[in-house]
Length: 480
Image 1 (cartoon, rainbow, N blue to C red):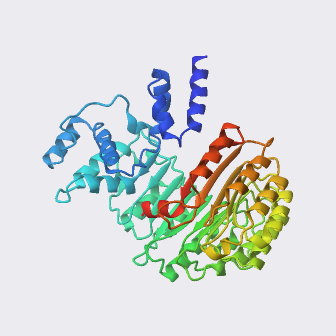
Image 2: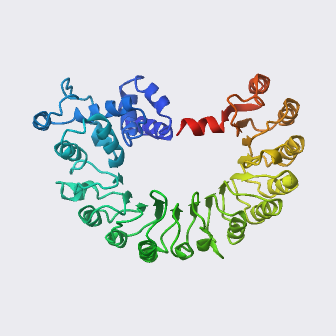
Image 3: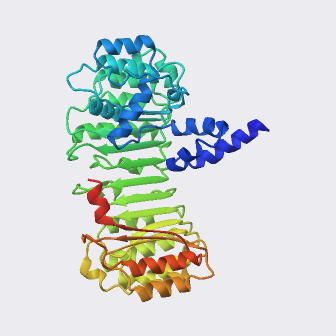
């Protein structure tokens, strides 16, 4: 019974793996909870953004070093973090399944003086993570990484269960050939493609993997990639064409490789900064597609793609795509005619096509999450939106499954319109609501305390389950 309880606890806490704040608060409940949560927290410990957190993580890592290793570091004058050495309560590194050498490189670079030779330090740290007692499932190798990790004792066993590999096509032969030797179990491959000095040895890694399910081609720098290299790289995927289910691309394609992925069910395309990515999408037919995420892809191309699916799409997310009224109507029609199982939709809606939105709500009865963009940087057009009509259609025609709403706008709805919307939502599932103000203003003048007080009133009544309001440009500026 005790083991069953531990298993149940693990399943519960595992569902909360992305809520680190909650997991940290549960650590002190009792020993059993602590022993269950620690492996979950340390599965992927690399997402520290602040320097203080990075130093703390490095300190914990160093605390696992043997006396001999610590003495070697002291000889190299790397002793500022190990003067107050204390053996950790757990062998945290044994719980790691992700080894992010890119993050580790940033941590080391921001913590250790540049005048110090870091080669000995790297050797000691890599030996902690790569040995016959650890089993890594995710590996991230940074640009110009020159440590031949395949030569470390126990590497083959350590990487025997590797599922995900991220590396740069500019890395040297020693790294790429070594990875090809030990990473044949990889199911998902992320390649950061450089502008020059690309290494053709990366194609050997692609060919030695037993069965690839996912590919990510990410552009490095200004995306002016070596076209001849990219063509060879894309063509090397042909042997995995039937098995690939997930494809993401943020670079200019050199071939029509996507059309070879006949069993693809997830497609992500980002054409920001690219003049033309439509060549690879012309007359594209992906009958089993379930998830489509597109950024800066022409809306007519996306409408055509959706028309060539077979009714399996459950998620559509479209950002930064210009919509005139006709193209906006066409893609809405394509969605409600071809996507009866749709659960999530993010799309710009023009005022003239609110009636088409009603048809979508009626035909997509599985829809549970709706993200409506009211404008796309066209602030004058947003003034024409009829919020009352939009809210009326949503409350009248939404399927019973729909409860999660996000509205991105420049001009906020009037208080009376919002109140009528929430009044009409009574006796339905409690709503999750997020408003995103797409404004350069220092303060959200349109979305003021009266709006906030109104929201709190409906939260108290249970009509709104949870609510968030953000200013898009404040988030954008703070993140850069």
